[in-house]
Amino acid sequence: MKTRRQATILDLISEYPIETQEELLYRLRENGFNVTQATVSRDIKELGLLKSRSGDNRYRYTSFSGSVIDAKDNMGGFFNSSVISVKSAQNMVVIKTLAGMANAICASIDSMDIKGIVGTLAGDDTIFIVCADNAKADSLVIDLKKHL
Image (cartoon, rainbow, N blue to C red):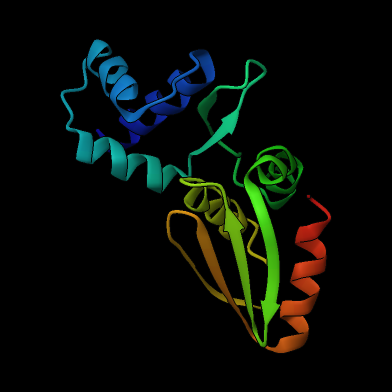
């Protein structure tokens, strides 16, 4: 059931410009899935769905295929439009974003499986990235600033 539901979610977000969890919940129920908002939220997280800006400047759920290359190719648009600053402090990188965008950007960074990142933590408008050492943090800042 879960696999079928998540496959349906991927189909729905590719077919419709779904902007909210509530809209996704409605579409799932239309397709015969009696789910709760909490289940939809878990599915979104497990599928690694992100919100990205569409041509009409609205945000909608999108999915990366899971490959590092796709994530890097698709990251530029919403990273550039949502990040305020990227700075390193010792072996940490701190990214300041527009309100509400930290989770999506952090999920995108996580999906890239970048060597040398020990862990990430996202709040509403701030991301902390712990790197293996100071040099890796400095290198990551340079790489991330290329997307700004």
